[in-house]
Length: 320
Image (cartoon, rainbow, N blue to C red):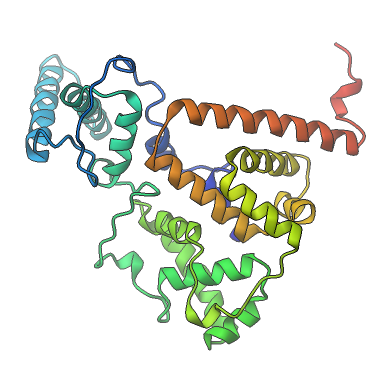
């Protein structure tokens, strides 16, 4: 359960949610006409709109242009569905934001992340907006999402779930229900508020008073490696590439990281979420490309290592 859930959060899972993926990578086809010619603009720290205009004026301008285009399309006989209309608004939102702020594409992505819930209905890690009346966040058996996350952290770090239940003061059957209902809500919540907030809490390595005395064992080497992946992005990307290569060669990647670097699943995923959140908040296309390419290169290196340990790839002896 944990590895599948964590994989979905950090991109390791093969089964990705298309809506979330579209939100995260929607700038792939953006034409960066302003990369080398943008001016300094003061932005609102929460919305990332320029302070030289109002949000209401911005939304009105986008709507005016979008509705004019929609009217022309319909007048020419085009049958527009809801997705077509959303895409038209999406494109004009980018156009107006770029014109009014004379910004580059990285700033555009930061703006889209900061306003993803408002404009696309999907939360983005690092920009979670919580509605206190959200039924998906109602406590289960008195356990809220933050506490559930703290329990997940302890268990995935290697603490026996029975010890966690004992510390929390309830029977194991309660944990089983928690670990069914919370993931179920994550799947049902189309705004990804629960999933994203869970990841944010995980990145913060949250705890609750009842669990503070439960410590997972970690070696001196593991502690040193853990501190290193928190500060050395290249080392983190290397281990992420190694883990993925291990999975592809039939190994348990999380267990391989634990055995070879002393870092347990909970700690590794917490750092992964920290890097993803930092990336979303300070989007820089050049850095993202560099880290992605570095991870891919390391994944190939470790894949060759695992292949050699297993006697080589099956296709190595095939001549074409």
